[in-house]
Image (cartoon, rainbow, N blue to C red):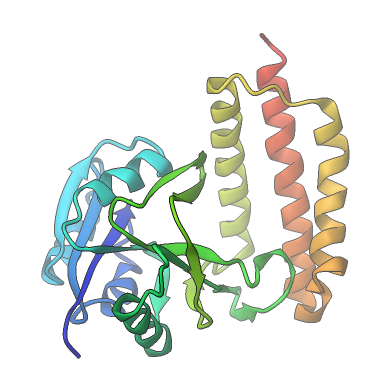
Length: 253
């Protein structure tokens, strides 16, 4: 197929062990690949990206939001496609993206469901699915915002919906998920402090239980078996941890 007027925008830490899959899924049909690599990375990630023809920029880590905006600012194509190092676009979604770009029908951005693999199983229920992500947008019509590490694309204009999944090769082990929960809770607490966002004790007490009930029962997480239960419990644990840390941090003022 002809190359589409799309710039792929990636940010990356030390991802040499898995970034090839993401690059394989976009090389050949997009116009350019932009990768912003943390300046302290030395595991070969930069060299791998360059072998795929990517334009690589080394920058100090500024947080997910600023890093993603930096990558988008460097893109030259009419459309931008945000991708993470642990994600993959299969041919069905690629073909759907091709149709959307050719005839956007008044839309300036598109979202699509993201399906996550957790400990060897694709998760189809609970808080993790369909997990729609807006990742394709016309240049100049959107920017990244939110509270680190939970970035969100803010779009000026109409957002269309695609149906095929973006694959997310997430945590391979439970230890990976625990480490991520601890790291993300620290980032969340720092962001709340920086933004002078006060977290009440009620958030610490009630939010974790609600997140478990919503994920496991209301969103049918139990249909994913053991993994569904683990995800719901880990979501509750992460919610408790991040709001507890943020409450302690913001209450010191």
